[in-house]
Image (cartoon, rainbow, N blue to C red; front, side, top):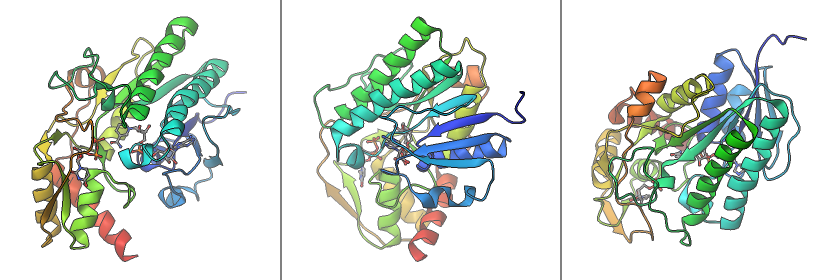
Length: 316
Ligand code: NAD
Ligand code: UDP
């Protein structure tokens, strides 16, 4: 029987990016099954979606097999912040690898396309700048970040082997640092840390000397790119970089956050964590050409939205 609307699975749907993606897919008229074990995600993130009759939640760990029916799968389940993915590194690798195997198995049984939330971390501490998709990366296989980096690299391998071996339709997006509302205040990533510190009048903690760079993408731009990638024809598999190619040092970011939040916080320097990449900026040529997309939200504007979100959250 022909269904009235497409049903999509979003794993990690209660997380930061996942919750925005669920909302966008509902807005597009799709029916959404949000799969999450709430390790780093929260009910609060999806609270506004719960009243929608086409939104369904399932508490489930992607390391276990999943039996649902769907027309497409977005696989985002995995802690993304270094402090969280390093809390239980074995579980992080399992989530990436077993999670990928289970979701690919589901996609194979259903014959549906599947998106993988890969990461700029597959490039490690890159020697090529900006990073193109052809670059194979510079990743330490045995360091504290390896559970995440190598887990995500192995997930990419699995996606491409399922594609070659089983003709599965895959869409691999390599996401660069993304920020916005619904980040957890104790998430530990730099944007949320700096904003919460600035709003609470505490010193902003810069790791190292603050000259390392990152490129920050506002979450609305990212979910637009993810849904566009999913809608491309079957010949498009990725990997494809998704992010914003503006590049800032952590010192510049700290100064912006202090100015935009009207804070009197000072800056404090802390040791640089092991294997912390020194530079990162996506080459977005493929994303622009293939998706007809480019990031629109400037860092200052995205930060203002995110500061407003945290202000409300901290005062509630
Ligand atoms: P997040 O931690 O907010 O979201 C991850 C979600 O996955 C959470 O809701 C968490 O509870 C859930 N989860 C974790 N392990 C699970 C498991 N075993 N079973 C089911 N659910 C599980 O992180 P995010 O920033 O929203 O990241 C989403 C995805 O995007 C991740 O796969 C991450 O690796 C990728 N990514 C994010 C960024 C970024 O800057 N935010 C950058 C690159 C890649
Ligand atoms: N960072 C920082 N202060 C913080 C948190 C992070 O200076 O309070 C730095 C961190 O060392 C890294 C950059 O900010 O160089 C981005 O860190 P994040 O954890 O957000 O993302 P990732 O390292 O995974 O890109």
